[in-house]
Amino acid sequence: MDRKVLDEYFAGDQLAKALGMTIKEITPGGAVVTMPLMKIHENGLGNTHGGAIFSLADFCFAVASNSHGQVAVAANVGITYLRPPAKGTLTATAREIHRGRRLGTYDIDVTDEKGKTVAVFRGTVAVLEQTIAEALARRE
Image (cartoon, rainbow, N blue to C red; front, side):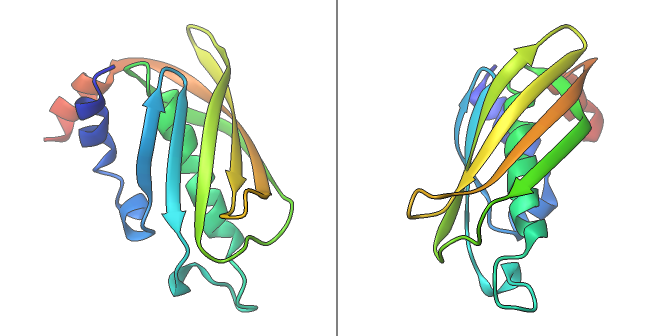
């Protein structure tokens, strides 16, 4: 899939933009997305909010699962938080576990700047018949 088309598609994700996420890499079935931790990401304890970590993993999941050029939407997801991250930048790395005609499963690891895994996420998508290019044309 053309990276330029995917970048245009994901530029429409306002939450990812607001949280400071950047797509660093897209491969067929894979993705790397970073998010620098800011004050907005903190919970009441001053730690990184679980919702911010989940949002990063979920966005990376979306990028990886849509990398084939077909629209894919989440059908089921789960996350396990392992430890609070060190300050700095979080990195989510997605890999495709299985991709069929209708379903795909992906694992996403979220690590901090020290390379420690802070969360693991697994998601399954429903693969739609619509292409990314068709979705972009309808969005305009």
